[in-house]
Image 1 (cartoon, rainbow, N blue to C red):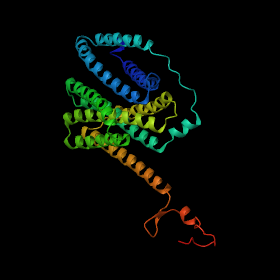
Image 2 (image 1 turned 90 degrees about the horizontal axis):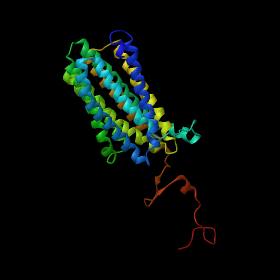
Image 3 (image 1 turned 180 degrees about the horizontal axis):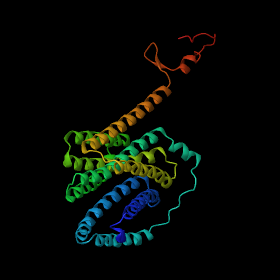
Length: 329
């Protein structure tokens, strides 16, 4: 990229960097379960890594921005130095081993209805994040906003994600995972509709912060749902599988504003409507599961004296005395 800052090759190179970034996210999801001691530590590790990533990104933004003001090449050289440090750290990681093919029990667990509906909700959240990332960048540039506003949107996104990661762990100790995920998609819906109502760059900054916070909360809730509903699955492979799906959702949704940038309010309304769709699908799936559980319960009818009975109880023969009739009292 240093040698192609002023020609069209910069764009495929930038796209390649994004692909590598997504590959890192999938690899990290596969690796973390192999380096923690138990399932509780997994969620805490993901939360801490999210906080660390945001903090380091915020710290690196200042020198990178200062160097970019002198020359973009200096900023890229700074990035190279940081990534070389990351390479050294990565070489010290243990070699994780993931089974090549899932076992039958694992396949059944990963087809769990609760897990499937949670994965759909999380995919829609990631799609919103990918859409917003490119939409806000192109929208701000087309409307000739100062680069300071672009930095503010990126900063708000990072701060929101850090806040979501920080809140996820204490929320998990107080709320059920499905309720956490529901709260996350409701946040996306409400913030999108509110931003469409108010409009402007301030609404864009707020929407970026809230949507990324919802993404952080939702991801931690989803990790817990996977652990609860697929205890026999290979955690490394399961998380890598779902993370790949989420990253593809992010990328596919991000292509839309690259091809056609929406007006501000229309983009915000799109985010809100996707959030509403996610809430509808997730709650409908939850109701269907509850109806299925209710239908599977044995029918209980009251009898004289207030004691409930089941069909099996009704068919049970009465106790007989020596004469074959009722017992004498």
